[in-house]
Length: 609
Image 1 (cartoon, rainbow, N blue to C red):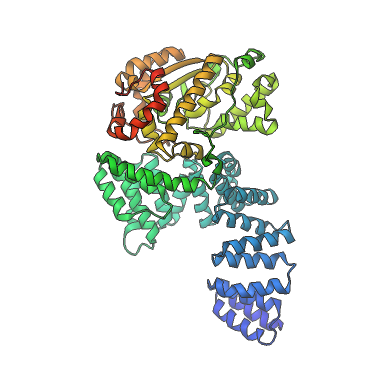
Image 2: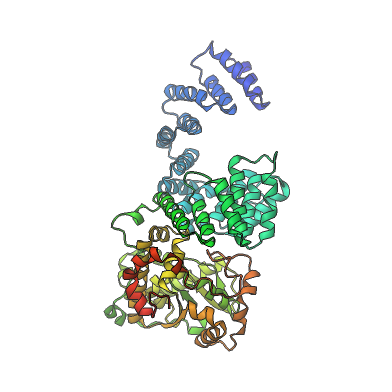
Protein backbone atom coordinates (compact mmCIF):
# COMPACT_ATOMS: atom_id res chain seq x y z
CA UNK A 1 0.00 0.00 0.00
CA UNK A 2 1.27 3.44 -0.89
CA UNK A 3 0.88 6.50 1.29
CA UNK A 4 -1.08 8.05 -1.61
CA UNK A 5 -3.67 5.28 -1.41
CA UNK A 6 -3.97 5.67 2.36
CA UNK A 7 -4.38 9.42 1.98
CA UNK A 8 -7.08 8.98 -0.65
CA UNK A 9 -9.06 6.51 1.46
CA UNK A 10 -8.76 8.67 4.57
CA UNK A 11 -9.82 11.73 2.58
CA UNK A 12 -12.92 9.91 1.33
CA UNK A 13 -13.86 8.97 4.89
CA UNK A 14 -13.25 12.50 6.11
CA UNK A 15 -15.40 13.86 3.28
CA UNK A 16 -18.26 11.64 4.41
CA UNK A 17 -18.05 9.29 1.41
CA UNK A 18 -17.53 5.83 2.95
CA UNK A 19 -18.70 4.19 -0.29
CA UNK A 20 -15.78 5.72 -2.15
CA UNK A 21 -13.45 4.73 0.70
CA UNK A 22 -14.71 1.14 0.39
CA UNK A 23 -14.02 1.08 -3.34
CA UNK A 24 -10.50 2.41 -2.91
CA UNK A 25 -9.78 -0.02 -0.04
CA UNK A 26 -10.97 -3.05 -1.98
CA UNK A 27 -8.94 -2.03 -5.03
CA UNK A 28 -5.79 -1.63 -2.94
CA UNK A 29 -6.38 -4.94 -1.16
CA UNK A 30 -6.26 -6.79 -4.45
CA UNK A 31 -2.56 -5.95 -4.50
CA UNK A 32 -1.96 -6.31 -0.72
CA UNK A 33 -4.65 -8.64 0.73
CA UNK A 34 -2.95 -8.95 4.14
CA UNK A 35 -2.28 -5.24 4.67
CA UNK A 36 -3.58 -4.38 8.13
CA UNK A 37 -4.08 -0.67 7.43
CA UNK A 38 -6.13 -1.38 4.31
CA UNK A 39 -8.23 -3.97 6.10
CA UNK A 40 -8.85 -1.55 8.93
CA UNK A 41 -9.89 1.23 6.54
CA UNK A 42 -12.21 -1.16 4.70
CA UNK A 43 -13.82 -2.23 7.97
CA UNK A 44 -14.27 1.39 9.00
CA UNK A 45 -15.86 2.28 5.66
CA UNK A 46 -18.33 -0.61 5.99
CA UNK A 47 -19.03 0.39 9.58
CA UNK A 48 -19.83 3.96 8.52
CA UNK A 49 -22.25 2.54 5.95
CA UNK A 50 -24.04 0.61 8.72
CA UNK A 51 -23.10 -2.76 7.23
CA UNK A 52 -21.76 -4.50 10.36
CA UNK A 53 -22.32 -8.01 8.99
CA UNK A 54 -19.97 -7.30 6.07
CA UNK A 55 -17.44 -5.62 8.37
CA UNK A 56 -17.33 -8.63 10.69
CA UNK A 57 -15.10 -10.92 8.60
CA UNK A 58 -12.72 -8.02 8.00
CA UNK A 59 -12.39 -7.31 11.75
CA UNK A 60 -12.04 -11.04 12.36
CA UNK A 61 -9.20 -11.24 9.84
CA UNK A 62 -7.41 -8.44 11.67
CA UNK A 63 -7.57 -10.40 14.96
CA UNK A 64 -6.06 -13.40 13.18
CA UNK A 65 -3.27 -11.28 11.74
CA UNK A 66 -2.57 -9.64 15.12
CA UNK A 67 -4.05 -11.90 17.84
CA UNK A 68 -2.29 -9.91 20.56
CA UNK A 69 -3.88 -6.58 19.62
CA UNK A 70 -6.39 -5.41 22.20
CA UNK A 71 -7.55 -2.70 19.81
CA UNK A 72 -8.36 -5.16 17.03
CA UNK A 73 -10.29 -7.41 19.41
CA UNK A 74 -12.18 -4.37 20.68
CA UNK A 75 -13.10 -3.31 17.13
CA UNK A 76 -14.17 -6.84 16.29
CA UNK A 77 -16.34 -6.96 19.43
CA UNK A 78 -17.97 -3.64 18.53
CA UNK A 79 -18.90 -4.98 15.10
CA UNK A 80 -20.30 -8.14 16.67
CA UNK A 81 -22.38 -6.08 19.08
CA UNK A 82 -23.62 -3.93 16.20
CA UNK A 83 -24.70 -7.09 14.40
CA UNK A 84 -26.61 -8.26 17.47
CA UNK A 85 -24.23 -11.14 18.27
CA UNK A 86 -23.96 -10.28 21.95
CA UNK A 87 -22.47 -13.56 23.23
CA UNK A 88 -19.64 -13.41 20.71
CA UNK A 89 -19.19 -9.68 21.39
CA UNK A 90 -18.88 -10.37 25.11
CA UNK A 91 -16.13 -12.92 24.47
CA UNK A 92 -14.26 -10.60 22.11
CA UNK A 93 -14.45 -7.65 24.52
CA UNK A 94 -13.26 -9.91 27.33
CA UNK A 95 -10.28 -10.91 25.16
CA UNK A 96 -9.49 -7.23 24.51
CA UNK A 97 -9.54 -6.52 28.25
CA UNK A 98 -7.43 -9.59 28.98
CA UNK A 99 -4.79 -8.41 26.51
CA UNK A 100 -4.83 -4.89 27.92
CA UNK A 101 -6.44 -4.43 31.36
CA UNK A 102 -5.99 -0.69 30.93
CA UNK A 103 -8.16 -0.55 27.81
CA UNK A 104 -10.93 1.59 29.32
CA UNK A 105 -12.94 1.62 26.10
CA UNK A 106 -13.03 -2.18 25.98
CA UNK A 107 -13.96 -2.39 29.67
CA UNK A 108 -16.80 0.10 29.21
CA UNK A 109 -18.09 -1.57 26.06
CA UNK A 110 -17.99 -4.97 27.72
CA UNK A 111 -20.05 -3.46 30.55
CA UNK A 112 -22.53 -1.99 28.06
CA UNK A 113 -22.83 -5.34 26.29
CA UNK A 114 -23.61 -7.04 29.59
CA UNK A 115 -26.26 -4.37 30.19
CA UNK A 116 -27.90 -5.33 26.90
CA UNK A 117 -27.80 -8.95 28.09
CA UNK A 118 -29.42 -7.84 31.39
CA UNK A 119 -26.47 -9.01 33.44
CA UNK A 120 -26.79 -5.82 35.47
CA UNK A 121 -24.58 -6.69 38.42
CA UNK A 122 -21.58 -7.70 36.27
CA UNK A 123 -22.15 -4.66 34.05
CA UNK A 124 -22.14 -2.39 37.09
CA UNK A 125 -18.79 -3.75 38.34
CA UNK A 126 -17.11 -3.26 34.95
CA UNK A 127 -18.47 0.22 34.38
CA UNK A 128 -17.50 1.34 37.88
CA UNK A 129 -14.01 0.03 37.13
CA UNK A 130 -13.98 2.09 33.93
CA UNK A 131 -15.04 5.20 35.87
CA UNK A 132 -12.28 4.61 38.39
CA UNK A 133 -9.74 4.50 35.56
CA UNK A 134 -11.19 7.54 33.78
CA UNK A 135 -13.14 9.51 36.46
CA UNK A 136 -13.54 12.72 34.44
CA UNK A 137 -15.62 11.01 31.71
CA UNK A 138 -19.30 11.94 32.03
CA UNK A 139 -20.06 9.36 29.33
CA UNK A 140 -18.72 6.58 31.56
CA UNK A 141 -20.47 7.99 34.62
CA UNK A 142 -23.84 8.01 32.86
CA UNK A 143 -23.40 4.42 31.68
CA UNK A 144 -22.27 3.30 35.13
CA UNK A 145 -25.16 5.14 36.79
CA UNK A 146 -27.64 3.39 34.50
CA UNK A 147 -26.13 0.03 35.48
CA UNK A 148 -26.37 1.03 39.16
CA UNK A 149 -30.06 1.91 38.78
CA UNK A 150 -30.75 -1.40 37.04
CA UNK A 151 -28.93 -3.14 39.92
CA UNK A 152 -31.03 -1.29 42.54
CA UNK A 153 -27.94 0.67 43.64
CA UNK A 154 -29.60 4.08 43.56
CA UNK A 155 -27.13 5.59 46.02
CA UNK A 156 -24.27 4.57 43.71
CA UNK A 157 -26.04 6.24 40.80
CA UNK A 158 -26.45 9.44 42.82
CA UNK A 159 -22.76 9.44 43.73
CA UNK A 160 -21.74 9.05 40.09
CA UNK A 161 -23.92 11.90 38.83
CA UNK A 162 -23.76 14.27 41.79
CA UNK A 163 -21.43 16.69 40.00
CA UNK A 164 -22.72 16.43 36.42
CA UNK A 165 -23.01 20.24 36.27
CA UNK A 166 -19.22 20.47 36.18
CA UNK A 167 -19.44 19.14 32.61
CA UNK A 168 -21.89 21.83 31.43
CA UNK A 169 -22.25 22.73 28.61
CA UNK A 170 -22.31 19.13 27.44
CA UNK A 171 -22.19 19.88 23.69
CA UNK A 172 -23.47 16.37 23.09
CA UNK A 173 -27.24 16.00 22.67
CA UNK A 174 -27.37 12.17 22.78
CA UNK A 175 -25.35 12.19 26.00
CA UNK A 176 -27.52 14.96 27.49
CA UNK A 177 -30.66 12.93 26.72
CA UNK A 178 -29.18 9.78 28.25
CA UNK A 179 -28.14 11.73 31.34
CA UNK A 180 -31.67 13.03 31.73
CA UNK A 181 -33.11 9.53 31.30
CA UNK A 182 -30.82 8.11 33.99
CA UNK A 183 -31.67 10.97 36.34
CA UNK A 184 -35.36 10.12 35.84
CA UNK A 185 -34.58 6.47 36.53
CA UNK A 186 -32.89 7.60 39.76
CA UNK A 187 -35.86 9.81 40.71
CA UNK A 188 -33.84 13.03 40.37
CA UNK A 189 -36.63 14.77 38.51
CA UNK A 190 -35.82 18.52 38.82
CA UNK A 191 -32.35 18.05 37.32
CA UNK A 192 -33.75 15.88 34.52
CA UNK A 193 -36.38 18.52 33.78
CA UNK A 194 -33.71 21.20 33.46
CA UNK A 195 -31.68 19.13 30.99
CA UNK A 196 -34.69 18.24 28.87
CA UNK A 197 -36.09 21.77 28.78
CA UNK A 198 -32.68 22.98 27.62
CA UNK A 199 -32.77 20.43 24.79
CA UNK A 200 -36.36 21.34 23.88
CA UNK A 201 -35.35 24.99 23.55
CA UNK A 202 -32.63 24.01 21.08
CA UNK A 203 -34.55 21.19 19.34
CA UNK A 204 -38.29 21.87 19.69
CA UNK A 205 -39.28 18.94 17.51
CA UNK A 206 -37.18 16.24 19.18
CA UNK A 207 -39.72 13.41 19.78
CA UNK A 208 -37.91 11.66 22.62
CA UNK A 209 -37.30 14.91 24.50
CA UNK A 210 -41.00 15.74 24.22
CA UNK A 211 -42.00 12.30 25.47
CA UNK A 212 -39.66 12.45 28.44
CA UNK A 213 -40.91 15.93 29.34
CA UNK A 214 -44.54 14.84 29.00
CA UNK A 215 -43.84 11.99 31.42
CA UNK A 216 -42.09 14.32 33.88
CA UNK A 217 -44.73 17.05 33.68
CA UNK A 218 -47.47 14.55 34.46
CA UNK A 219 -45.47 13.29 37.46
CA UNK A 220 -45.06 16.90 38.59
CA UNK A 221 -48.82 17.50 38.26
CA UNK A 222 -48.29 19.90 35.34
CA UNK A 223 -51.00 18.24 33.28
CA UNK A 224 -51.53 20.95 30.65
CA UNK A 225 -47.79 21.12 29.98
CA UNK A 226 -47.69 17.34 29.63
CA UNK A 227 -50.54 17.33 27.11
CA UNK A 228 -48.89 20.12 25.09
CA UNK A 229 -45.81 17.95 24.49
CA UNK A 230 -47.67 15.18 22.64
CA UNK A 231 -49.32 16.54 19.44
CA UNK A 232 -45.95 17.25 17.79
CA UNK A 233 -44.96 13.62 18.39
CA UNK A 234 -48.24 12.19 17.07
CA UNK A 235 -48.65 14.26 13.91
CA UNK A 236 -47.67 12.92 10.50
CA UNK A 237 -44.19 13.83 9.37
CA UNK A 238 -42.94 14.47 12.90
CA UNK A 239 -40.08 12.03 12.48
CA UNK A 240 -41.22 10.01 15.48
CA UNK A 241 -40.97 6.22 15.42
CA UNK A 242 -43.79 3.73 15.88
CA UNK A 243 -42.50 3.04 19.39
CA UNK A 244 -42.44 6.74 20.26
CA UNK A 245 -46.00 7.21 19.05
CA UNK A 246 -47.03 4.20 21.16
CA UNK A 247 -45.36 5.79 24.17
CA UNK A 248 -47.26 9.03 23.48
CA UNK A 249 -50.57 7.12 23.50
CA UNK A 250 -49.68 5.63 26.89
CA UNK A 251 -49.05 9.12 28.26
CA UNK A 252 -52.38 10.25 26.78
CA UNK A 253 -54.02 7.37 28.64
CA UNK A 254 -52.40 8.49 31.89
CA UNK A 255 -53.70 12.03 31.32
CA UNK A 256 -57.17 10.65 30.60
CA UNK A 257 -57.08 8.85 33.95
CA UNK A 258 -56.04 12.10 35.65
CA UNK A 259 -59.03 13.76 33.93
CA UNK A 260 -61.28 11.03 35.39
CA UNK A 261 -61.98 9.54 31.95
CA UNK A 262 -61.14 5.85 32.48
CA UNK A 263 -63.10 4.67 29.43
CA UNK A 264 -60.98 6.93 27.21
CA UNK A 265 -57.82 5.61 28.90
CA UNK A 266 -58.92 2.00 28.44
CA UNK A 267 -59.67 2.51 24.74
CA UNK A 268 -56.33 4.22 24.14
CA UNK A 269 -54.42 1.43 25.89
CA UNK A 270 -56.27 -1.37 24.11
CA UNK A 271 -55.70 0.35 20.78
CA UNK A 272 -51.99 0.92 21.41
CA UNK A 273 -51.07 -2.38 23.08
CA UNK A 274 -47.89 -2.78 25.15
CA UNK A 275 -44.72 -0.97 24.09
CA UNK A 276 -42.81 -4.29 24.13
CA UNK A 277 -43.21 -7.90 25.18
CA UNK A 278 -41.77 -6.93 28.58
CA UNK A 279 -43.96 -3.85 29.12
CA UNK A 280 -45.56 -4.62 32.48
CA UNK A 281 -46.44 -0.97 33.06
CA UNK A 282 -48.97 -1.22 30.22
CA UNK A 283 -50.92 -3.83 32.17
CA UNK A 284 -50.74 -1.86 35.42
CA UNK A 285 -52.20 1.11 33.52
CA UNK A 286 -54.88 -1.07 31.97
CA UNK A 287 -55.78 -2.51 35.36
CA UNK A 288 -56.18 0.98 36.79
CA UNK A 289 -58.62 1.91 34.00
CA UNK A 290 -60.61 -1.33 34.40
CA UNK A 291 -60.76 -0.76 38.17
CA UNK A 292 -62.22 2.73 37.74
CA UNK A 293 -64.79 1.28 35.31
CA UNK A 294 -65.82 -1.36 37.86
CA UNK A 295 -64.66 -4.32 35.76
CA UNK A 296 -63.29 -6.52 38.54
CA UNK A 297 -62.38 -9.54 36.42
CA UNK A 298 -60.57 -7.51 33.76
CA UNK A 299 -58.70 -5.65 36.50
CA UNK A 300 -57.40 -8.82 38.12
CA UNK A 301 -56.55 -10.41 34.76
CA UNK A 302 -54.47 -7.37 33.80
CA UNK A 303 -52.73 -7.33 37.19
CA UNK A 304 -51.78 -11.00 36.93
CA UNK A 305 -50.11 -10.35 33.59
CA UNK A 306 -48.43 -7.20 34.95
CA UNK A 307 -46.90 -9.05 37.89
CA UNK A 308 -45.82 -12.02 35.78
CA UNK A 309 -43.95 -9.72 33.39
CA UNK A 310 -42.50 -7.61 36.19
CA UNK A 311 -41.24 -10.71 37.97
CA UNK A 312 -39.36 -11.76 34.83
CA UNK A 313 -37.70 -8.35 34.63
CA UNK A 314 -36.87 -8.00 38.34
CA UNK A 315 -35.23 -11.42 38.48
CA UNK A 316 -32.36 -9.94 36.48
CA UNK A 317 -31.36 -7.44 39.18
CA UNK A 318 -32.44 -9.30 42.33
CA UNK A 319 -32.81 -13.04 41.66
CA UNK A 320 -32.43 -13.87 45.35
CA UNK A 321 -35.71 -12.06 46.14
CA UNK A 322 -37.61 -14.51 43.95
CA UNK A 323 -35.96 -17.71 45.18
CA UNK A 324 -38.40 -20.35 46.51
CA UNK A 325 -37.05 -19.96 50.05
CA UNK A 326 -36.99 -16.14 50.06
CA UNK A 327 -38.97 -14.51 52.88
CA UNK A 328 -42.21 -12.81 51.90
CA UNK A 329 -40.58 -9.40 52.45
CA UNK A 330 -36.99 -10.03 51.34
CA UNK A 331 -35.34 -7.23 53.31
CA UNK A 332 -32.88 -8.27 55.98
CA UNK A 333 -32.83 -5.67 58.74
CA UNK A 334 -31.16 -5.74 62.20
CA UNK A 335 -33.22 -6.96 65.16
CA UNK A 336 -32.63 -6.51 68.86
CA UNK A 337 -33.55 -8.67 71.82
CA UNK A 338 -34.59 -7.37 75.22
CA UNK A 339 -31.33 -8.70 76.64
CA UNK A 340 -29.26 -6.88 74.03
CA UNK A 341 -31.20 -3.66 74.51
CA UNK A 342 -30.58 -3.82 78.25
CA UNK A 343 -26.84 -3.69 77.52
CA UNK A 344 -26.97 -0.70 75.16
CA UNK A 345 -24.67 1.99 76.59
CA UNK A 346 -26.32 5.35 77.21
CA UNK A 347 -24.73 7.98 74.95
CA UNK A 348 -25.15 11.67 74.31
CA UNK A 349 -27.72 12.02 71.54
CA UNK A 350 -29.94 14.75 70.03
CA UNK A 351 -32.96 15.89 72.01
CA UNK A 352 -36.46 15.47 70.61
CA UNK A 353 -36.56 18.94 69.00
CA UNK A 354 -33.28 18.20 67.17
CA UNK A 355 -34.25 14.69 66.06
CA UNK A 356 -36.12 13.68 62.91
CA UNK A 357 -39.82 12.86 63.03
CA UNK A 358 -40.16 9.45 61.40
CA UNK A 359 -43.32 8.57 59.47
CA UNK A 360 -43.52 4.83 58.85
CA UNK A 361 -46.05 2.17 57.92
CA UNK A 362 -46.56 -0.55 55.37
CA UNK A 363 -46.64 0.99 51.85
CA UNK A 364 -50.04 2.36 50.80
CA UNK A 365 -51.14 2.89 54.40
CA UNK A 366 -51.41 6.69 54.14
CA UNK A 367 -47.81 7.71 54.87
CA UNK A 368 -47.71 10.21 51.99
CA UNK A 369 -50.87 11.91 53.20
CA UNK A 370 -49.32 12.24 56.66
CA UNK A 371 -46.06 13.54 55.24
CA UNK A 372 -47.80 16.22 53.16
CA UNK A 373 -49.84 17.32 56.17
CA UNK A 374 -46.70 17.64 58.27
CA UNK A 375 -44.75 19.38 55.49
CA UNK A 376 -47.51 22.00 55.25
CA UNK A 377 -46.67 23.10 58.80
CA UNK A 378 -44.14 25.96 58.83
CA UNK A 379 -42.22 24.36 61.72
CA UNK A 380 -41.58 21.13 59.80
CA UNK A 381 -39.72 20.15 56.61
CA UNK A 382 -40.14 16.84 54.79
CA UNK A 383 -38.41 15.19 51.86
CA UNK A 384 -39.23 12.45 49.37
CA UNK A 385 -38.62 8.85 50.39
CA UNK A 386 -34.99 7.91 50.81
CA UNK A 387 -33.62 4.61 52.14
CA UNK A 388 -31.09 6.27 54.43
CA UNK A 389 -31.18 3.61 57.13
CA UNK A 390 -30.80 0.81 54.61
CA UNK A 391 -27.63 2.58 53.51
CA UNK A 392 -26.34 3.16 57.02
CA UNK A 393 -26.90 -0.50 57.79
CA UNK A 394 -25.07 -1.39 54.61
CA UNK A 395 -22.10 0.69 55.76
CA UNK A 396 -22.06 -1.12 59.09
CA UNK A 397 -22.44 -4.50 57.44
CA UNK A 398 -19.52 -3.87 55.12
CA UNK A 399 -17.38 -2.89 58.09
CA UNK A 400 -18.40 -5.89 60.20
CA UNK A 401 -21.63 -7.83 59.79
CA UNK A 402 -21.59 -8.68 63.49
CA UNK A 403 -22.42 -5.06 64.35
CA UNK A 404 -25.90 -5.51 62.90
CA UNK A 405 -26.41 -8.56 65.08
CA UNK A 406 -25.68 -6.56 68.24
CA UNK A 407 -25.89 -2.77 68.05
CA UNK A 408 -24.62 -2.47 71.63
CA UNK A 409 -21.06 -2.64 70.26
CA UNK A 410 -21.47 0.81 68.69
CA UNK A 411 -19.46 3.44 70.57
CA UNK A 412 -20.29 7.11 71.11
CA UNK A 413 -17.94 7.97 68.26
CA UNK A 414 -19.65 5.46 65.95
CA UNK A 415 -23.10 6.85 66.65
CA UNK A 416 -21.88 10.42 66.14
CA UNK A 417 -20.31 9.50 62.80
CA UNK A 418 -23.43 7.64 61.62
CA UNK A 419 -25.58 10.67 62.49
CA UNK A 420 -23.19 12.87 60.52
CA UNK A 421 -23.51 10.52 57.56
CA UNK A 422 -27.29 10.62 57.88
CA UNK A 423 -27.32 14.43 57.92
CA UNK A 424 -24.99 14.52 54.93
CA UNK A 425 -27.35 12.28 52.96
CA UNK A 426 -30.28 14.52 53.90
CA UNK A 427 -28.38 17.63 52.81
CA UNK A 428 -27.70 15.99 49.45
CA UNK A 429 -31.43 15.51 48.87
CA UNK A 430 -32.91 18.78 50.18
CA UNK A 431 -31.77 22.24 51.16
CA UNK A 432 -32.30 22.09 54.91
CA UNK A 433 -34.11 24.85 56.72
CA UNK A 434 -32.48 24.55 60.12
CA UNK A 435 -35.31 26.49 61.76
CA UNK A 436 -37.56 23.51 61.14
CA UNK A 437 -37.70 19.91 62.33
CA UNK A 438 -37.03 17.24 59.74
CA UNK A 439 -39.77 14.81 58.71
CA UNK A 440 -38.31 11.58 57.33
CA UNK A 441 -41.06 9.57 55.64
CA UNK A 442 -40.17 6.15 54.35
CA UNK A 443 -42.80 3.45 54.94
CA UNK A 444 -40.45 0.51 55.36
CA UNK A 445 -38.18 2.38 57.75
CA UNK A 446 -40.32 0.50 60.25
CA UNK A 447 -37.98 -2.45 59.60
CA UNK A 448 -34.99 -0.38 60.70
CA UNK A 449 -36.39 0.74 64.06
CA UNK A 450 -33.44 -0.58 66.14
CA UNK A 451 -30.81 1.52 64.34
CA UNK A 452 -33.14 4.54 64.21
CA UNK A 453 -33.60 4.38 67.99
CA UNK A 454 -29.89 3.76 68.52
CA UNK A 455 -29.02 6.99 66.68
CA UNK A 456 -32.06 9.12 67.58
CA UNK A 457 -33.47 7.77 70.86
CA UNK A 458 -35.61 10.89 71.47
CA UNK A 459 -37.31 10.80 68.06
CA UNK A 460 -41.05 10.77 67.59
CA UNK A 461 -42.53 8.06 65.35
CA UNK A 462 -45.88 8.19 63.56
CA UNK A 463 -47.10 4.80 62.40
CA UNK A 464 -49.69 4.88 59.60
CA UNK A 465 -52.25 2.09 59.87
CA UNK A 466 -55.00 1.24 57.39
CA UNK A 467 -57.30 -1.74 56.95
CA UNK A 468 -54.88 -4.52 55.91
CA UNK A 469 -57.10 -5.63 53.02
CA UNK A 470 -57.14 -2.12 51.54
CA UNK A 471 -53.37 -1.96 51.97
CA UNK A 472 -52.80 -5.32 50.24
CA UNK A 473 -55.10 -4.48 47.34
CA UNK A 474 -53.54 -1.06 46.81
CA UNK A 475 -50.00 -2.50 46.87
CA UNK A 476 -50.96 -5.22 44.41
CA UNK A 477 -52.16 -2.54 41.98
CA UNK A 478 -48.78 -0.76 42.05
CA UNK A 479 -45.42 -1.24 40.40
CA UNK A 480 -42.82 -0.29 42.98
CA UNK A 481 -39.33 1.02 42.23
CA UNK A 482 -37.85 -1.37 44.79
CA UNK A 483 -37.32 -4.94 43.62
CA UNK A 484 -37.85 -6.15 47.19
CA UNK A 485 -41.33 -4.61 47.18
CA UNK A 486 -41.98 -5.91 43.67
CA UNK A 487 -41.10 -9.41 44.86
CA UNK A 488 -43.29 -9.07 47.95
CA UNK A 489 -46.17 -7.87 45.78
CA UNK A 490 -45.84 -10.50 43.06
CA UNK A 491 -48.93 -12.35 44.37
CA UNK A 492 -51.70 -11.40 46.75
CA UNK A 493 -50.83 -14.29 49.06
CA UNK A 494 -47.16 -13.36 49.31
CA UNK A 495 -48.13 -9.74 49.87
CA UNK A 496 -50.37 -10.73 52.79
CA UNK A 497 -47.53 -12.74 54.36
CA UNK A 498 -45.16 -9.78 53.81
CA UNK A 499 -47.58 -7.44 55.58
CA UNK A 500 -47.81 -9.73 58.60
CA UNK A 501 -44.03 -10.27 58.64
CA UNK A 502 -43.30 -6.53 58.63
CA UNK A 503 -45.96 -5.68 61.19
CA UNK A 504 -44.88 -8.42 63.57
CA UNK A 505 -41.29 -7.24 63.29
CA UNK A 506 -42.36 -3.69 64.13
CA UNK A 507 -44.51 -4.72 67.08
CA UNK A 508 -41.74 -6.89 68.48
CA UNK A 509 -39.19 -4.07 68.19
CA UNK A 510 -41.58 -1.53 69.72
CA UNK A 511 -42.19 -3.87 72.64
CA UNK A 512 -38.42 -4.04 73.29
CA UNK A 513 -37.35 -0.48 72.47
CA UNK A 514 -40.39 1.45 73.73
CA UNK A 515 -40.01 4.44 71.35
CA UNK A 516 -42.43 7.37 71.38
CA UNK A 517 -45.05 6.28 68.81
CA UNK A 518 -48.36 7.72 67.66
CA UNK A 519 -50.60 5.38 65.66
CA UNK A 520 -52.46 7.26 62.93
CA UNK A 521 -55.40 5.30 61.55
CA UNK A 522 -56.12 6.22 57.91
CA UNK A 523 -59.88 5.83 58.28
CA UNK A 524 -59.93 8.20 61.27
CA UNK A 525 -57.76 10.70 59.44
CA UNK A 526 -60.06 10.97 56.42
CA UNK A 527 -63.21 10.93 58.59
CA UNK A 528 -62.12 13.83 60.82
CA UNK A 529 -58.96 15.55 59.54
CA UNK A 530 -59.19 18.46 61.98
CA UNK A 531 -59.39 16.27 65.04
CA UNK A 532 -56.59 14.01 63.87
CA UNK A 533 -54.37 16.97 62.91
CA UNK A 534 -54.83 18.35 66.44
CA UNK A 535 -53.92 14.96 67.87
CA UNK A 536 -50.75 14.80 65.75
CA UNK A 537 -49.81 18.38 66.66
CA UNK A 538 -50.16 17.61 70.34
CA UNK A 539 -47.98 14.52 69.99
CA UNK A 540 -45.28 16.51 68.18
CA UNK A 541 -45.58 19.43 70.61
CA UNK A 542 -46.71 21.86 67.92
CA UNK A 543 -48.88 24.77 69.01
CA UNK A 544 -51.07 25.17 65.92
CA UNK A 545 -52.47 22.30 63.84
CA UNK A 546 -54.37 24.43 61.31
CA UNK A 547 -51.59 24.64 58.66
CA UNK A 548 -51.72 20.86 58.31
CA UNK A 549 -55.28 21.06 57.02
CA UNK A 550 -54.08 23.03 53.97
CA UNK A 551 -51.86 20.16 52.83
CA UNK A 552 -53.49 19.77 49.38
CA UNK A 553 -52.71 23.38 48.44
CA UNK A 554 -49.20 22.99 49.80
CA UNK A 555 -48.72 19.75 47.81
CA UNK A 556 -49.81 21.44 44.57
CA UNK A 557 -47.08 24.04 45.09
CA UNK A 558 -44.33 21.44 45.40
CA UNK A 559 -42.01 20.81 42.47
CA UNK A 560 -42.17 17.06 42.77
CA UNK A 561 -43.75 14.33 44.90
CA UNK A 562 -41.89 11.08 44.36
CA UNK A 563 -44.40 8.47 45.55
CA UNK A 564 -47.11 6.47 43.74
CA UNK A 565 -49.81 8.60 45.41
CA UNK A 566 -48.53 11.87 43.89
CA UNK A 567 -51.86 12.40 42.13
CA UNK A 568 -54.01 11.77 45.21
CA UNK A 569 -52.29 14.04 47.75
CA UNK A 570 -52.99 17.20 45.72
CA UNK A 571 -56.72 16.60 46.31
CA UNK A 572 -58.63 17.36 49.53
CA UNK A 573 -59.14 14.48 51.96
CA UNK A 574 -61.85 12.05 50.86
CA UNK A 575 -63.07 8.54 51.68
CA UNK A 576 -62.76 7.09 48.15
CA UNK A 577 -60.08 4.58 49.16
CA UNK A 578 -61.82 3.37 52.35
CA UNK A 579 -63.25 -0.14 52.02
CA UNK A 580 -62.16 -0.43 48.41
CA UNK A 581 -61.22 -4.06 48.93
CA UNK A 582 -64.88 -5.10 49.18
CA UNK A 583 -65.16 -4.83 45.38
CA UNK A 584 -62.56 -7.60 45.22
CA UNK A 585 -63.89 -9.67 48.08
CA UNK A 586 -63.63 -12.99 46.24
CA UNK A 587 -59.89 -12.40 45.71
CA UNK A 588 -59.32 -11.07 49.22
CA UNK A 589 -61.24 -13.60 51.32
CA UNK A 590 -58.55 -16.32 51.00
CA UNK A 591 -56.12 -13.83 52.58
CA UNK A 592 -58.20 -13.20 55.71
CA UNK A 593 -56.78 -16.16 57.69
CA UNK A 594 -53.23 -14.92 56.91
CA UNK A 595 -54.11 -11.37 57.95
CA UNK A 596 -56.19 -12.38 60.98
CA UNK A 597 -53.50 -11.64 63.62
CA UNK A 598 -53.07 -8.09 62.33
CA UNK A 599 -56.80 -7.54 61.78
CA UNK A 600 -57.32 -8.49 65.39
CA UNK A 601 -54.37 -6.43 66.69
CA UNK A 602 -55.42 -3.23 64.92
CA UNK A 603 -59.12 -3.70 65.61
CA UNK A 604 -60.29 -4.33 62.05
CA UNK A 605 -62.65 -7.09 60.97
CA UNK A 606 -63.68 -8.72 57.73
CA UNK A 607 -66.50 -6.23 57.26
CA UNK A 608 -63.98 -3.44 56.78
CA UNK A 609 -64.40 -1.60 60.07
